[in-house]
Picture 1 (spheres, helix red, strand yellow):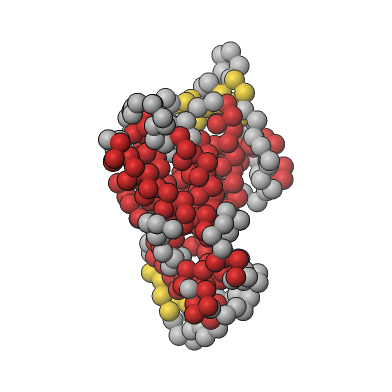
Picture 2: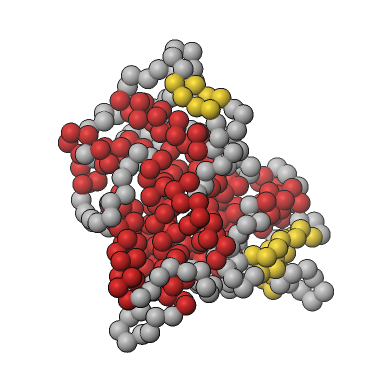
Length: 322
C-alpha cells in the first residue's frame, strides 16, 4: 500500500463516518498522510482528525476514535493507533485485500448483512402511491439485512415520504422501472426512465449490470486459460478494495437513514472501479498465467458478488450476459 492508497483508504473511512451519521462534517477532497517521524508510532501518520475537529464540534481525539473504528478491518492496514492530541498512526500489512476477498467469497450475496439493528422493530404504514410501495418494500429488505424485524404495519406504522412517481414496468421493464424510482433520493424527483434503456456507459444502470456480466465472462475466460480464482498474492487495487470494504457500512447507513439511493450510488462506484480494473485480470498476449492473475480474478469475482447482492436488495436482476 502506497501513501496515496493509504490516503484514499482514510478518506473512505471519513466518508463512511459521515454517511452513517457519526460525524457531521463536510468530507474533505483528500486526506494528507506522511511518513511517521523518527521515534513516532507506526509507519505513516495523518492529522485529519485535528483538521475536522472544529467543524465536527468534537475533540480531535474523539474524531480520531470514530475514524479509527472504521479503519480496523481496512485492507492493507495492520494497525491504527491514536497519539498525542489526535494523530492517527498506521502500521501497514503486506497482504492487502486478501482477507476481504476471502470474506466476500465466503459470505456470498449476504456480504454486508449484519446484526447492528437486531432487537429493533419497524412497521411501515400502508402505502398506495406507486413509488412509495417500491421504496417501502426495498427498505424492508434493507432493514432485515441488518437484523431488524421489519414489515408492513397497517395505518399506524412509520410513514414513507417520497416524491411521487409512477412505476413504469410495462414501458421500461422491471429493472429500469425500479432503478428510476430508487436511484434518486426518496424526496427527489424520480429519474427519467427512457435513458435507462440505453446500453451506454452514460447509463449508470447499464454500467452496474454490465460490470457484473463482465465478471462472469472473466470467470469463463479464466477457466479456458486455466486460471482459477485464488487469493495467493496481494492485489494492487485500492479503489476497488476500498469500495468493496465500504459495502457493509453503506447497507447499514441506507437502512438507518431510509435511503436506498445510497446503495444504488455505491453500486455505481463499485462498477466504475471494477471496469477500470478488469483489463488487468487475465493474461494478455504471450503473458503466462500467474498467481497474480488468480488473485485478480478472485477480486473481480468478489466485486461481482457484491454487485449481485446489492442489486438483489434493490429488487433488480444481475444478468450473466448483456
